[in-house]
Image (cartoon, rainbow, N blue to C red; front, side, top):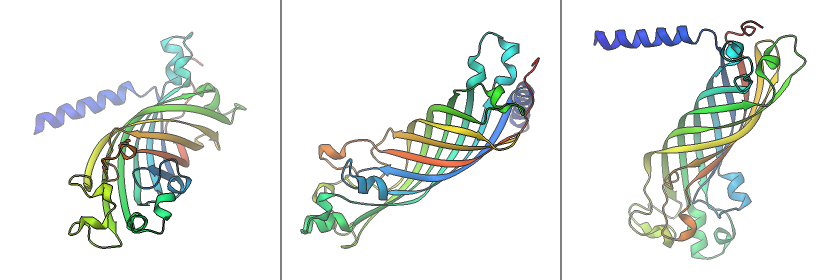
Length: 263
């Protein structure tokens, strides 16, 4: 056990030495996540608006503008890039069916209205952010740049847990309380599961003080899975993978702000 701990300590120490001339930020965010699943009618505004929950994120940023001149004074790309690693938690999201079919005054409509689900989710990921304005000019305390938009993309790994219920009864004892398309074996599989996620979005930083930024971000998440909601109907319109829209605001703190080397 001692040897692995020693190796781990050496690796962490080496990375800390290598990263000492970079700039490190930490941030915290809160917002709303709208899940687009098999609950509700596709492209229905009610489903997009109501099947959502609160989301919370913490992030660590590594930027390279402090090394730009040492690497290559003619390469300005490093002055616009940040690498973000983040942990995102989606609280218990309540889902139900909306739309024309769920509104029908029939037993099939009642089955849809009575069907409800929940999802909890934890995502871990790495993103690349590209800022439109040079970071050294934005961070520099005497700069008149207070607004810096960015584009972002990356990948996450999602751990989620879902449930399904019906107001008409216990579906595990009587599956017929669910709509017909979910009554076949294997079309409702709830519990813990995992998935890769592709994320793309945009946002902006607003400089509040020398070391503190207000940040707003919007992103689209595509899950490489149709099991986020626990439903897998046989019909074509329910065979699409899940996706989500996130809107968050938060604060970002510069841990080791310093002027670029050889500025």
